[in-house]
Length: 458
Picture 1 (tube, rainbow, N blue to C red):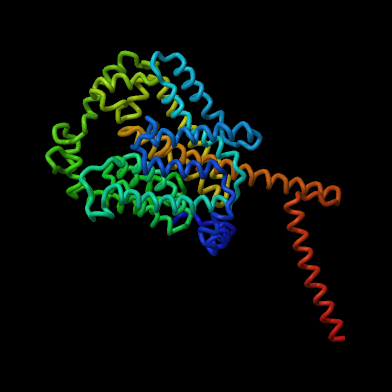
Picture 2: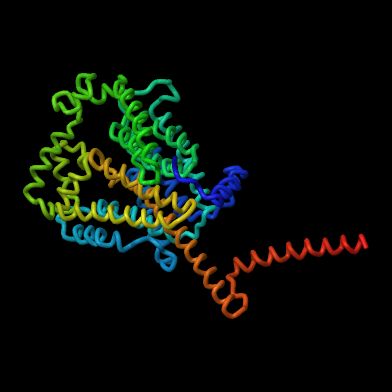
Protein backbone atom coordinates (compact mmCIF):
# COMPACT_ATOMS: atom_id res chain seq x y z
CA UNK A 1 0.00 0.00 0.00
CA UNK A 2 0.97 3.67 -0.02
CA UNK A 3 3.14 5.24 2.62
CA UNK A 4 1.48 6.07 5.92
CA UNK A 5 0.35 9.63 6.48
CA UNK A 6 1.93 11.32 9.51
CA UNK A 7 -0.30 11.56 12.57
CA UNK A 8 -0.15 15.34 12.66
CA UNK A 9 -1.54 15.57 9.12
CA UNK A 10 -4.36 13.15 9.93
CA UNK A 11 -5.22 15.21 13.00
CA UNK A 12 -5.37 18.36 10.88
CA UNK A 13 -7.59 16.68 8.29
CA UNK A 14 -9.92 15.38 11.02
CA UNK A 15 -10.03 18.81 12.64
CA UNK A 16 -11.02 20.46 9.36
CA UNK A 17 -13.39 17.59 8.67
CA UNK A 18 -15.40 18.55 11.80
CA UNK A 19 -16.24 21.85 10.12
CA UNK A 20 -18.54 22.18 7.17
CA UNK A 21 -16.86 22.99 3.90
CA UNK A 22 -18.68 26.32 3.91
CA UNK A 23 -17.19 27.29 7.27
CA UNK A 24 -13.75 26.10 6.21
CA UNK A 25 -13.81 28.22 3.06
CA UNK A 26 -15.41 31.18 4.84
CA UNK A 27 -12.51 31.34 7.29
CA UNK A 28 -9.83 30.45 4.77
CA UNK A 29 -7.16 32.92 3.76
CA UNK A 30 -6.35 31.61 0.33
CA UNK A 31 -4.63 34.06 -1.97
CA UNK A 32 -6.71 36.03 -4.44
CA UNK A 33 -4.84 34.39 -7.30
CA UNK A 34 -6.18 31.00 -6.14
CA UNK A 35 -9.77 32.20 -6.33
CA UNK A 36 -9.07 33.92 -9.64
CA UNK A 37 -7.71 30.70 -11.17
CA UNK A 38 -10.63 28.56 -10.01
CA UNK A 39 -13.25 31.08 -11.17
CA UNK A 40 -11.68 31.71 -14.57
CA UNK A 41 -11.06 28.00 -15.15
CA UNK A 42 -14.69 27.20 -14.44
CA UNK A 43 -15.96 29.97 -16.72
CA UNK A 44 -13.57 28.80 -19.43
CA UNK A 45 -14.98 25.28 -19.10
CA UNK A 46 -18.58 26.55 -19.06
CA UNK A 47 -18.41 29.22 -21.76
CA UNK A 48 -15.02 28.70 -23.41
CA UNK A 49 -16.47 28.50 -26.91
CA UNK A 50 -18.66 31.58 -26.51
CA UNK A 51 -17.52 35.00 -27.67
CA UNK A 52 -17.71 38.30 -25.84
CA UNK A 53 -16.70 41.54 -27.55
CA UNK A 54 -15.00 39.62 -30.37
CA UNK A 55 -12.92 37.50 -28.01
CA UNK A 56 -13.60 34.06 -26.53
CA UNK A 57 -14.38 33.63 -22.85
CA UNK A 58 -11.40 31.30 -22.53
CA UNK A 59 -9.22 34.12 -23.85
CA UNK A 60 -10.43 36.48 -21.14
CA UNK A 61 -9.85 33.74 -18.57
CA UNK A 62 -6.13 33.38 -19.11
CA UNK A 63 -5.61 37.12 -19.64
CA UNK A 64 -7.20 37.90 -16.26
CA UNK A 65 -4.95 35.39 -14.51
CA UNK A 66 -1.93 36.75 -16.33
CA UNK A 67 -2.78 40.34 -15.37
CA UNK A 68 -3.50 39.58 -11.69
CA UNK A 69 -0.31 37.55 -11.40
CA UNK A 70 1.73 40.32 -13.02
CA UNK A 71 0.40 42.74 -10.38
CA UNK A 72 0.97 40.38 -7.44
CA UNK A 73 4.59 39.45 -8.19
CA UNK A 74 6.28 42.89 -7.95
CA UNK A 75 4.59 43.62 -4.62
CA UNK A 76 5.67 40.29 -3.10
CA UNK A 77 9.09 39.57 -4.57
CA UNK A 78 10.56 38.87 -1.13
CA UNK A 79 8.07 36.04 -0.56
CA UNK A 80 8.35 34.38 -3.97
CA UNK A 81 9.79 30.86 -3.83
CA UNK A 82 9.16 29.63 -7.37
CA UNK A 83 12.26 28.18 -9.12
CA UNK A 84 12.66 30.95 -11.69
CA UNK A 85 16.05 29.64 -12.77
CA UNK A 86 14.40 26.49 -14.16
CA UNK A 87 12.08 28.42 -16.49
CA UNK A 88 14.26 31.44 -17.23
CA UNK A 89 16.01 29.95 -20.32
CA UNK A 90 12.67 28.91 -21.83
CA UNK A 91 11.11 32.29 -21.09
CA UNK A 92 14.01 34.18 -22.67
CA UNK A 93 13.87 31.89 -25.70
CA UNK A 94 10.15 32.58 -26.19
CA UNK A 95 10.64 36.34 -25.87
CA UNK A 96 13.60 36.38 -28.26
CA UNK A 97 11.86 34.09 -30.77
CA UNK A 98 8.74 36.22 -30.66
CA UNK A 99 10.76 39.37 -31.29
CA UNK A 100 12.61 37.86 -34.25
CA UNK A 101 9.59 36.14 -35.83
CA UNK A 102 8.00 37.53 -38.97
CA UNK A 103 4.57 36.37 -37.78
CA UNK A 104 2.16 37.92 -35.30
CA UNK A 105 2.76 36.02 -32.09
CA UNK A 106 2.23 38.25 -29.04
CA UNK A 107 -0.88 36.41 -27.87
CA UNK A 108 0.52 32.91 -28.46
CA UNK A 109 3.83 33.78 -26.80
CA UNK A 110 2.06 35.24 -23.76
CA UNK A 111 -0.07 32.10 -23.48
CA UNK A 112 3.06 29.97 -23.28
CA UNK A 113 4.40 32.03 -20.38
CA UNK A 114 1.08 32.60 -18.58
CA UNK A 115 1.08 29.42 -16.39
CA UNK A 116 4.64 30.12 -15.23
CA UNK A 117 3.68 33.67 -14.24
CA UNK A 118 0.66 32.29 -12.35
CA UNK A 119 2.91 29.79 -10.54
CA UNK A 120 5.28 32.57 -9.52
CA UNK A 121 2.37 34.59 -8.11
CA UNK A 122 0.92 31.58 -6.27
CA UNK A 123 4.27 30.91 -4.59
CA UNK A 124 4.04 34.29 -2.84
CA UNK A 125 0.90 33.25 -0.93
CA UNK A 126 1.00 33.02 2.85
CA UNK A 127 -0.14 29.44 3.04
CA UNK A 128 0.16 26.62 5.56
CA UNK A 129 -1.13 23.07 6.00
CA UNK A 130 -4.63 24.23 6.90
CA UNK A 131 -4.86 26.41 3.80
CA UNK A 132 -3.67 23.54 1.63
CA UNK A 133 -6.52 21.46 3.01
CA UNK A 134 -8.93 24.29 2.18
CA UNK A 135 -7.52 24.27 -1.35
CA UNK A 136 -8.32 20.55 -1.56
CA UNK A 137 -11.91 21.36 -0.60
CA UNK A 138 -12.02 23.80 -3.50
CA UNK A 139 -10.69 21.11 -5.83
CA UNK A 140 -13.49 18.77 -4.80
CA UNK A 141 -16.17 21.44 -5.23
CA UNK A 142 -14.70 22.33 -8.61
CA UNK A 143 -14.69 18.66 -9.66
CA UNK A 144 -18.37 18.25 -8.79
CA UNK A 145 -19.20 21.44 -10.68
CA UNK A 146 -17.25 20.22 -13.69
CA UNK A 147 -19.09 16.90 -13.73
CA UNK A 148 -22.47 18.61 -13.49
CA UNK A 149 -21.41 20.97 -16.26
CA UNK A 150 -20.39 18.05 -18.47
CA UNK A 151 -23.72 16.37 -17.81
CA UNK A 152 -25.55 19.50 -18.95
CA UNK A 153 -23.39 20.21 -22.00
CA UNK A 154 -23.62 16.63 -23.25
CA UNK A 155 -27.36 16.53 -22.60
CA UNK A 156 -27.05 13.54 -20.29
CA UNK A 157 -28.89 15.23 -17.41
CA UNK A 158 -31.61 16.49 -19.74
CA UNK A 159 -32.20 13.57 -22.10
CA UNK A 160 -30.52 10.66 -20.34
CA UNK A 161 -28.54 9.91 -23.49
CA UNK A 162 -24.98 10.65 -24.56
CA UNK A 163 -24.19 12.09 -28.00
CA UNK A 164 -21.81 10.37 -30.40
CA UNK A 165 -19.49 13.38 -30.45
CA UNK A 166 -18.92 16.35 -28.14
CA UNK A 167 -16.86 19.53 -28.04
CA UNK A 168 -15.62 19.00 -24.50
CA UNK A 169 -11.96 18.23 -25.19
CA UNK A 170 -10.71 21.18 -23.07
CA UNK A 171 -12.91 20.11 -20.15
CA UNK A 172 -11.63 16.54 -20.47
CA UNK A 173 -8.07 17.86 -20.37
CA UNK A 174 -8.88 19.70 -17.13
CA UNK A 175 -10.13 16.39 -15.74
CA UNK A 176 -6.74 14.75 -16.38
CA UNK A 177 -5.11 17.32 -14.08
CA UNK A 178 -7.68 16.75 -11.34
CA UNK A 179 -7.18 12.99 -11.68
CA UNK A 180 -3.44 13.37 -11.08
CA UNK A 181 -4.17 15.48 -8.01
CA UNK A 182 -6.50 12.87 -6.48
CA UNK A 183 -4.06 10.03 -7.20
CA UNK A 184 -1.40 11.78 -5.13
CA UNK A 185 -3.79 12.03 -2.21
CA UNK A 186 -4.68 8.35 -2.53
CA UNK A 187 -1.02 7.31 -2.57
CA UNK A 188 -0.64 8.78 0.92
CA UNK A 189 -3.50 6.81 2.41
CA UNK A 190 -6.59 8.87 1.63
CA UNK A 191 -8.72 6.09 0.21
CA UNK A 192 -11.62 8.44 -0.54
CA UNK A 193 -9.44 10.20 -3.09
CA UNK A 194 -9.56 7.02 -5.17
CA UNK A 195 -13.33 7.47 -5.37
CA UNK A 196 -12.80 11.08 -6.40
CA UNK A 197 -10.40 9.89 -9.08
CA UNK A 198 -13.02 7.45 -10.35
CA UNK A 199 -15.64 10.20 -10.44
CA UNK A 200 -13.52 12.69 -12.38
CA UNK A 201 -12.28 9.92 -14.68
CA UNK A 202 -15.82 9.63 -16.04
CA UNK A 203 -15.63 13.12 -17.54
CA UNK A 204 -13.32 12.18 -20.46
CA UNK A 205 -15.64 9.24 -21.09
CA UNK A 206 -18.64 11.58 -21.23
CA UNK A 207 -16.69 13.90 -23.51
CA UNK A 208 -15.49 10.93 -25.59
CA UNK A 209 -11.96 12.34 -25.79
CA UNK A 210 -9.84 9.30 -26.60
CA UNK A 211 -6.42 10.50 -25.51
CA UNK A 212 -7.81 12.04 -22.33
CA UNK A 213 -9.43 8.69 -21.44
CA UNK A 214 -6.12 6.91 -22.01
CA UNK A 215 -4.09 9.48 -20.06
CA UNK A 216 -6.50 9.54 -17.12
CA UNK A 217 -6.22 5.77 -16.85
CA UNK A 218 -2.42 5.95 -16.86
CA UNK A 219 -2.41 8.60 -14.13
CA UNK A 220 -3.39 6.00 -11.54
CA UNK A 221 -0.63 3.37 -11.85
CA UNK A 222 2.05 5.71 -13.26
CA UNK A 223 1.87 8.51 -10.73
CA UNK A 224 5.15 9.94 -9.42
CA UNK A 225 3.77 9.68 -5.90
CA UNK A 226 5.18 6.83 -3.78
CA UNK A 227 3.30 3.59 -4.32
CA UNK A 228 4.39 -0.03 -4.01
CA UNK A 229 5.07 -1.90 -7.23
CA UNK A 230 2.51 -4.57 -6.40
CA UNK A 231 -0.22 -1.97 -6.04
CA UNK A 232 0.81 -0.33 -9.31
CA UNK A 233 0.54 -3.66 -11.12
CA UNK A 234 -2.90 -4.36 -9.63
CA UNK A 235 -4.15 -0.91 -10.58
CA UNK A 236 -2.68 -1.26 -14.06
CA UNK A 237 -4.54 -4.53 -14.62
CA UNK A 238 -7.82 -3.04 -13.38
CA UNK A 239 -7.43 0.04 -15.56
CA UNK A 240 -6.53 -2.11 -18.58
CA UNK A 241 -9.64 -4.28 -18.15
CA UNK A 242 -11.89 -1.24 -17.76
CA UNK A 243 -10.27 0.36 -20.80
CA UNK A 244 -10.76 -2.77 -22.89
CA UNK A 245 -14.43 -2.95 -21.96
CA UNK A 246 -14.82 0.74 -22.82
CA UNK A 247 -13.03 0.26 -26.15
CA UNK A 248 -15.71 -2.13 -27.41
CA UNK A 249 -18.63 0.16 -26.55
CA UNK A 250 -20.56 1.56 -29.52
CA UNK A 251 -19.62 5.21 -28.76
CA UNK A 252 -15.89 4.54 -28.71
CA UNK A 253 -16.05 2.23 -31.73
CA UNK A 254 -17.87 4.87 -33.74
CA UNK A 255 -15.31 7.51 -32.76
CA UNK A 256 -12.26 5.30 -33.35
CA UNK A 257 -13.02 3.72 -36.73
CA UNK A 258 -14.46 5.07 -39.96
CA UNK A 259 -16.44 1.88 -40.41
CA UNK A 260 -17.93 2.20 -36.94
CA UNK A 261 -16.28 -0.92 -35.59
CA UNK A 262 -12.85 -2.51 -35.26
CA UNK A 263 -10.42 -4.39 -33.03
CA UNK A 264 -7.20 -3.54 -31.26
CA UNK A 265 -5.25 -4.72 -34.31
CA UNK A 266 -7.06 -2.19 -36.48
CA UNK A 267 -5.68 0.76 -34.49
CA UNK A 268 -2.50 0.68 -36.56
CA UNK A 269 -4.40 0.49 -39.86
CA UNK A 270 -4.46 3.92 -41.48
CA UNK A 271 -7.35 2.91 -43.70
CA UNK A 272 -9.80 2.20 -40.89
CA UNK A 273 -8.68 4.49 -38.05
CA UNK A 274 -10.53 7.82 -37.88
CA UNK A 275 -8.01 10.63 -37.39
CA UNK A 276 -10.21 13.61 -38.38
CA UNK A 277 -7.60 14.78 -40.88
CA UNK A 278 -4.80 14.94 -38.30
CA UNK A 279 -2.64 12.41 -40.10
CA UNK A 280 -2.73 14.46 -43.31
CA UNK A 281 -1.73 17.64 -41.46
CA UNK A 282 1.01 15.79 -39.60
CA UNK A 283 2.54 14.56 -42.84
CA UNK A 284 2.60 18.07 -44.31
CA UNK A 285 4.08 19.51 -41.11
CA UNK A 286 6.84 16.89 -41.02
CA UNK A 287 7.84 17.77 -44.58
CA UNK A 288 7.96 21.47 -43.74
CA UNK A 289 9.84 20.84 -40.48
CA UNK A 290 12.56 19.08 -42.47
CA UNK A 291 13.19 22.32 -44.39
CA UNK A 292 14.09 24.26 -41.20
CA UNK A 293 14.71 21.61 -38.56
CA UNK A 294 16.91 23.37 -36.01
CA UNK A 295 15.41 26.81 -35.33
CA UNK A 296 12.01 26.43 -36.98
CA UNK A 297 10.01 28.86 -39.09
CA UNK A 298 9.37 31.42 -36.35
CA UNK A 299 7.00 31.91 -33.43
CA UNK A 300 3.38 31.17 -34.43
CA UNK A 301 4.36 30.44 -38.05
CA UNK A 302 2.25 27.27 -37.97
CA UNK A 303 -0.99 29.29 -37.81
CA UNK A 304 -0.64 30.52 -41.39
CA UNK A 305 0.12 27.02 -42.69
CA UNK A 306 -2.76 25.35 -40.84
CA UNK A 307 -5.20 28.02 -42.01
CA UNK A 308 -4.31 27.13 -45.59
CA UNK A 309 -4.47 23.38 -45.05
CA UNK A 310 -7.82 23.51 -43.25
CA UNK A 311 -9.29 26.20 -45.53
CA UNK A 312 -9.68 28.62 -42.63
CA UNK A 313 -11.32 26.18 -40.20
CA UNK A 314 -8.32 25.64 -37.89
CA UNK A 315 -5.52 27.87 -36.62
CA UNK A 316 -3.19 25.25 -35.15
CA UNK A 317 -2.54 21.51 -35.52
CA UNK A 318 -3.84 19.04 -32.97
CA UNK A 319 -0.30 18.17 -31.94
CA UNK A 320 1.75 20.55 -29.80
CA UNK A 321 4.98 18.66 -30.42
CA UNK A 322 4.69 19.15 -34.18
CA UNK A 323 3.68 22.76 -33.67
CA UNK A 324 6.75 23.38 -31.50
CA UNK A 325 9.03 21.69 -34.02
CA UNK A 326 7.58 23.78 -36.84
CA UNK A 327 7.66 27.08 -34.95
CA UNK A 328 10.74 26.72 -32.72
CA UNK A 329 12.64 23.85 -34.29
CA UNK A 330 14.50 21.06 -32.53
CA UNK A 331 16.39 23.54 -30.35
CA UNK A 332 13.28 25.16 -28.92
CA UNK A 333 11.37 21.90 -28.55
CA UNK A 334 14.22 20.17 -26.73
CA UNK A 335 14.65 23.22 -24.48
CA UNK A 336 10.98 23.01 -23.51
CA UNK A 337 11.24 19.27 -22.84
CA UNK A 338 14.41 19.74 -20.78
CA UNK A 339 12.75 22.51 -18.78
CA UNK A 340 9.83 20.24 -17.87
CA UNK A 341 12.22 17.44 -16.87
CA UNK A 342 14.18 19.82 -14.64
CA UNK A 343 10.95 21.10 -13.10
CA UNK A 344 9.74 17.57 -12.32
CA UNK A 345 13.15 16.73 -10.85
CA UNK A 346 13.03 19.82 -8.66
CA UNK A 347 9.50 19.03 -7.46
CA UNK A 348 10.41 15.44 -6.58
CA UNK A 349 13.50 16.61 -4.71
CA UNK A 350 11.40 19.03 -2.67
CA UNK A 351 8.76 16.35 -2.07
CA UNK A 352 11.29 13.96 -0.55
CA UNK A 353 12.29 16.59 2.01
CA UNK A 354 8.76 17.74 2.84
CA UNK A 355 6.01 16.42 5.05
CA UNK A 356 2.23 16.30 5.24
CA UNK A 357 0.09 18.09 2.67
CA UNK A 358 3.09 19.96 1.30
CA UNK A 359 4.59 16.68 0.17
CA UNK A 360 1.30 15.65 -1.44
CA UNK A 361 1.16 18.91 -3.42
CA UNK A 362 4.74 18.51 -4.64
CA UNK A 363 4.04 14.99 -5.88
CA UNK A 364 0.77 16.13 -7.47
CA UNK A 365 2.61 18.91 -9.29
CA UNK A 366 5.26 16.52 -10.56
CA UNK A 367 2.66 13.95 -11.66
CA UNK A 368 0.71 16.58 -13.59
CA UNK A 369 3.45 16.75 -16.22
CA UNK A 370 2.82 13.17 -17.37
CA UNK A 371 -0.67 13.87 -18.80
CA UNK A 372 0.66 17.20 -20.06
CA UNK A 373 3.39 15.56 -22.15
CA UNK A 374 1.08 12.85 -23.48
CA UNK A 375 -1.77 15.20 -24.37
CA UNK A 376 0.67 17.27 -26.43
CA UNK A 377 0.70 14.44 -29.01
CA UNK A 378 -2.98 14.76 -29.88
CA UNK A 379 -4.14 18.17 -28.68
CA UNK A 380 -3.09 21.71 -27.81
CA UNK A 381 -2.78 21.50 -24.06
CA UNK A 382 0.03 24.07 -24.11
CA UNK A 383 -2.40 26.64 -25.48
CA UNK A 384 -5.09 25.61 -22.97
CA UNK A 385 -3.63 27.73 -20.16
CA UNK A 386 -7.14 28.61 -18.99
CA UNK A 387 -8.10 24.92 -18.80
CA UNK A 388 -4.92 23.24 -17.54
CA UNK A 389 -1.73 25.27 -17.17
CA UNK A 390 -2.97 27.95 -14.78
CA UNK A 391 -4.45 25.46 -12.31
CA UNK A 392 -1.44 23.17 -12.69
CA UNK A 393 1.06 25.87 -11.80
CA UNK A 394 -1.17 27.17 -9.00
CA UNK A 395 -0.76 23.78 -7.32
CA UNK A 396 2.98 23.92 -7.92
CA UNK A 397 3.29 27.50 -6.68
CA UNK A 398 1.31 26.79 -3.50
CA UNK A 399 3.54 23.82 -2.75
CA UNK A 400 6.64 26.02 -2.97
CA UNK A 401 5.02 28.76 -0.89
CA UNK A 402 3.94 26.38 1.88
CA UNK A 403 7.34 24.67 1.90
CA UNK A 404 9.15 27.99 2.26
CA UNK A 405 6.94 29.06 5.16
CA UNK A 406 7.41 25.74 6.96
CA UNK A 407 11.16 25.88 6.40
CA UNK A 408 11.49 29.45 7.70
CA UNK A 409 9.43 28.65 10.79
CA UNK A 410 11.62 25.65 11.50
CA UNK A 411 14.81 27.67 11.06
CA UNK A 412 13.45 30.42 13.34
CA UNK A 413 12.59 27.91 16.02
CA UNK A 414 16.01 26.21 15.84
CA UNK A 415 17.79 29.56 16.08
CA UNK A 416 15.71 30.51 19.12
CA UNK A 417 16.57 27.18 20.73
CA UNK A 418 20.27 27.78 20.10
CA UNK A 419 20.38 31.25 21.65
CA UNK A 420 18.19 30.22 24.54
CA UNK A 421 20.46 27.32 25.43
CA UNK A 422 23.64 29.36 24.96
CA UNK A 423 22.71 32.58 26.74
CA UNK A 424 20.06 31.22 29.06
CA UNK A 425 17.50 33.69 27.86
CA UNK A 426 14.26 33.37 25.96
CA UNK A 427 14.54 34.44 22.35
CA UNK A 428 11.73 32.33 20.95
CA UNK A 429 9.77 33.69 18.03
CA UNK A 430 6.43 35.26 18.81
CA UNK A 431 4.46 32.20 17.74
CA UNK A 432 6.36 29.78 19.94
CA UNK A 433 6.52 32.19 22.88
CA UNK A 434 2.74 32.56 22.67
CA UNK A 435 2.32 28.77 22.66
CA UNK A 436 4.61 28.40 25.67
CA UNK A 437 2.76 31.19 27.52
CA UNK A 438 -0.53 29.38 27.04
CA UNK A 439 1.00 26.13 28.28
CA UNK A 440 2.47 27.88 31.33
CA UNK A 441 -0.88 29.53 32.11
CA UNK A 442 -2.61 26.17 31.88
CA UNK A 443 -0.02 24.55 34.18
CA UNK A 444 -0.28 27.41 36.69
CA UNK A 445 -4.07 27.18 36.69
CA UNK A 446 -3.97 23.45 37.45
CA UNK A 447 -1.40 24.02 40.20
CA UNK A 448 -3.51 26.74 41.83
CA UNK A 449 -6.58 24.53 41.78
CA UNK A 450 -4.60 21.75 43.44
CA UNK A 451 -3.33 24.12 46.17
CA UNK A 452 -6.85 25.39 46.82
CA UNK A 453 -8.12 21.84 47.14
CA UNK A 454 -5.32 20.98 49.61
CA UNK A 455 -6.09 24.05 51.71
CA UNK A 456 -9.75 23.14 51.84
CA UNK A 457 -8.94 19.59 52.96
CA UNK A 458 -6.64 20.95 55.67
